[in-house]
Length: 238
Image 1 (cartoon, rainbow, N blue to C red):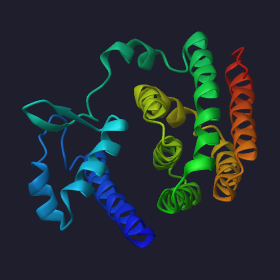
Image 2 (image 1 turned 90 degrees about the vertical axis):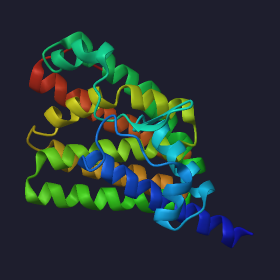
Image 3 (image 1 turned 180 degrees about the horizontal axis):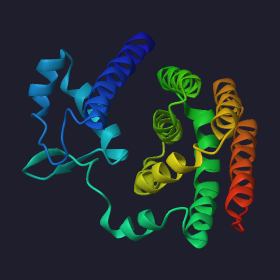
Image 4 (image 1 turned 30 degrees about the vertical axis):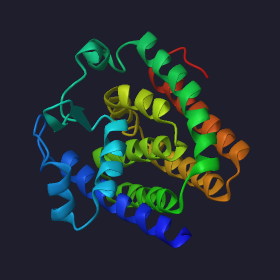
């Protein structure tokens, strides 16, 4: 029974990653309707249960949306119109930046604590892969690629938390967070420190040490606030 469960989790992870990459790369476009679950299952050589679970994970991250009687549609490329003023103001508005960091503190401390308690082996492996990619992007001087990896790591923690409400909260600020990370990680030294903190967070998650995982996330966000204060003279703290 345990072997069957692990196999299904691995299949779900494979389908999830395949569809996620197709969506983020633009191979699947915003507004595009995905094939029915039975067709996807046949195309990918898995059961409908695996497809359903993978789609649920994508939905929790805001990458797809199921519409009753119409099907499942790609949604990631669509901007969140209610947040557009905040996106346009990013790192030009002290209040907006401070409020995002405060929100991150409340959400990501809990997300990280839950991830340390609930992360599956496949989710930990994915976080490890993301961290490896982040290191490669630092070495290559690819700031945008690093920001994408940074975002993927935090969203991956949200998924590993096993709490769909918290995942949706992260999904709601996903664009804002990416814009922030894309700007922030262009500051000299910021990517190297981020990799170090992410490494410590992941190590604690792997050990199942919720207290240490939360502590490392807090230190990470405190470091972010310190840099924002120094670089932009913004009055921010967590």
